[in-house]
Image 1: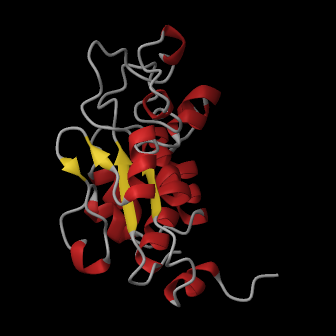
Image 2 (image 1 turned 30 degrees about the vertical axis):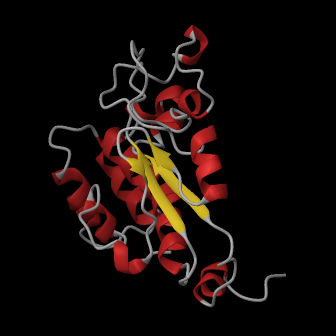
Image 3 (image 1 turned 180 degrees about the horizontal axis):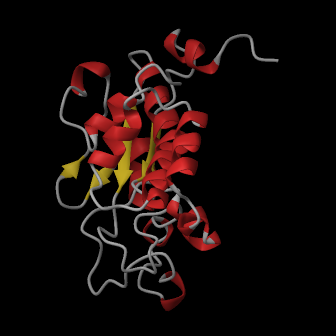
Length: 202
């Protein structure tokens, strides 16, 4: 039995001495919905019902649709599903961690299109970069084939893991990666309107 809700415990300083790296992939849910074919079975009614079921506040569905002109109901639902199940929990944990806790937050966006069989930056798309196997043919299922090294170190890779242990993850193009206490996180965020659509949802 938990003595407190995890977010409340984090706000009170639980785990503050442990650096944390957390984040999500931009199109997490496409891994599940494209592979199963479910993405093509979603109609407008199913989209509305699912958005309501995920707890997306009023007006949120219009935000997602407005950011994806011409997208199918399945594409829109994949975005909502991925945000609710992966992005929102990671963001809430990062927001709750009380200073002096050190937290790094990422969003993995590669590949930028859906030339990898329609998956895009889906769940697990980062793994070939985490384990430095991105050049192997066997790693190409949910990623776009690359001809040169990835421009930055993937979250969770060996250098990022060493960075957390020693002080800060590194990014190849910029060197150090600043952590995100509240005072340092007031900057434009990817898909900020969609993030705000989940305000009040844990």
